[in-house]
Picture 1: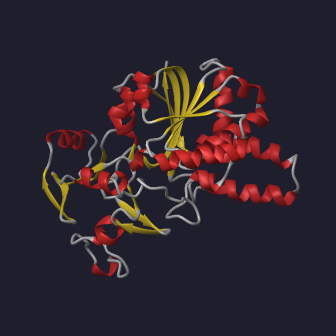
Picture 2: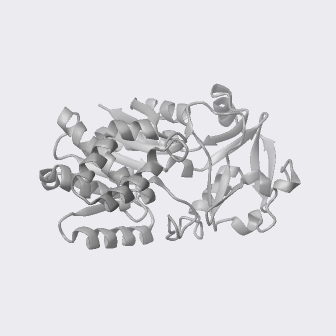
Picture 3: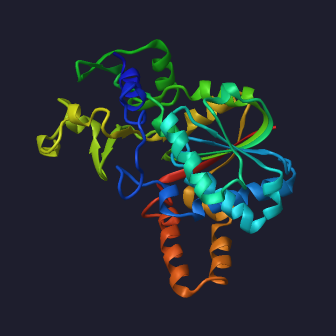
Length: 341
């Protein structure tokens, strides 16, 4: 089978990695910006307020999160809106796009524990169920979880009986690889369909999302597996490993299949063009460090400093540093803002 189908089954099949509820953070396989600091969601809330003040979105717009996991980020956004502009909670509406029933239960439970009946949270399986006049859409690390094809020197990757091999390349994948100069690497599948679904569902929106990757693809594979905070390069677990000393001795590819996260770097040039083809423009593209600074994370931390003791402030500051420190998430992750007018 094509690698994209293999990856889709790995992550989203009946017994796939994301088909059942998974913990993220210290007890899971990896960390995200959301699990690192509440000021990630706080900065996005501040951005929303500025977008409303600027007049691009109305005060009664919808906030839509995609891939919310437990709902921590949306809950942080709600909490910071309450702190910064509480009257907006009377006009805003809150939605989560979530296909997995276990995640929906966790999100409802967390919101109920956090806000009681003060915030009404609505769920939808996909954008195809939505029809909105305006929305502020947010996501964190979703495009790296789209299935991908893997190309190498004019061929693409297949998997049969758990064994990967390179074979004849699909014409469309070949054209994409040529256009974006991807001679060795990954090509995300489904970006354009996703962008078109969002564009059809919402008349006017701003979409803020963060992921790891870059505008231009380096000529190498980024495909990797996260398991219990260990990172395994995919090809180090296969017959294509170039140095046997790099092959893990404690685990095999078959053992990690569906029991761990598999991901790759996002090609932001291809992502931008996918949205452009759906009539959606790129409004901002920056490193996560630069984007969160523009969204006001420094000002929010300064506000905190004035209202809490030094121990609480330093604790939150250290957690927030993970988001913007260039040696951690600050440069490796990128933020992108799309707009449909």
